[in-house]
Length: 620
Ligand code: FAD
Image (cartoon, rainbow, N blue to C red):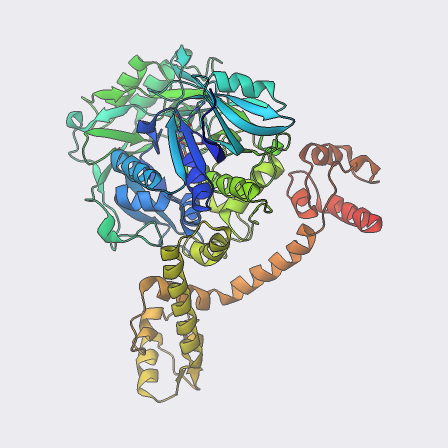
């Protein structure tokens, strides 16, 4: 049967990518359907109960700056907030929150259910309706046909999902959820490059069976950070602590003794796992001389005894899991509530996508999240938001929005995936961005909210709050530039005491703020107006790093000249004399659309780029 109403956009999958995708399309005014296996699992965290972290909170704050839900849900569900790298520079500072799974899911569900233009339907999508290289709809498990102009696929680890515990394995999308088999089969019939990846999760433990005596305790930071630009500490639920313990020699011996039944080390699992989130058996093999590995014991929520032992993800047989857990200090009598496992799943080569995340071969079909070869909730949310926006723009007959590498970590993520592809689960780090000082978590709103407003994803209340903040920053900067401190004045005396240096001439407050010994709080006393903390932070960072920021801007302008040199589609690299066969092969496989993107493909040398530049200039 055909569903009686047509939609503009259909999003398949209610995970982290899917929820941001459908919310973005709906915020843009598109009539949107979220089709998902189970309404109860909307926004479910499949693995660790935490949002943010290094590189990842940059993505969360960008999603937030563009009106997304992840940061807000984190503020409503976060039970421990910390600022990581707080002693390092602002570029690498990050926010991380431990989240109560139930509260987080409830927040996401409430945001979804209250979003105008968004409709939710619980059914498995089994087939795509594709007509002359254009997707026109989706067929569900019970044969119901939904028609739309654009479809966003965000099926996570579910396509052809296979769960492994020791040498036992069974089909599953994640523990407790069925896999997506019909859709996986259908997608394999389409002209898409598909491969397998794997990821894993630790066993969960009942807190009542843990002896916390002597374990290191870790509380959140004070003042308590917030995740959303509109967030407030008052929204946070009760805060709680984590604990820290360690593996030991005995744990490692037990792990080694179980290797002959490890699906990873006996070749049963073929997919490649996440390099930066390895299983405990991987760590014991790869870092054989390390005597112990740290484990963060994280609460799964305020209303449950379950704990997440972060650091011992494993797919070893259950009897080995039992022994290895009980060999760890504090866990001697631990009761495991859920076994650890690994999951293998289909992912699609992101090089088959355009920078808008639309598929190159099937118009109107967008891919976002884990199915593009990434790992992590934040990476999924960022792609979901972008795919949702671009699906909305397609429906509106507008050009896609493809953020550049110097605009957003979302741009870095998508550019990395599409320009270079990935052979292993990709996660975000600040080191992946070349313009780190510009792409800070603290200025994500200043970088993106105006664009979001133009795209239609930023609502009035966010826009008003942002406009007020931006105006306050500009006003305060102006005041600092035009307020002068005279030598010998009372103000000069206060500052001289702080800096230990004499002010020999008059200085503006802005110039004084550039000095490393002075912070904004030292000069803010010379203002009658109360300046909010986030405004003061921007004013201070901007003054202190102005020189570096200007240099990065110049570099961006240089790069943009290359970025603006297009390479025609189906360009014949064989016709360029002097390019090595290796470079030709790499460029032909990746088909970069600009010279700058060609330059980022590993193995494509600066010399090859100059040859290409000369060739393209001659042709044009
Ligand atoms: P998901 O969150 O998986 O959501 C997919 C959604 O699509 C689900 O709601 C599902 O029900 C729905 N769906 C699927 N198929 C269909 C269909 N045919 N019809 C309708 N609905 C469908 N990340 C890390 O960063 N570090 C880790 O260590 C880590 N370990 C993990 C361990 C395990 C065992 C698992 C399962 C995941 C792990 N992850 C880890 C990954 C993290 O969970 C994902 O990166 C993130 O959830 C991806 O979000 P997503 O929206 O792409 O997919």
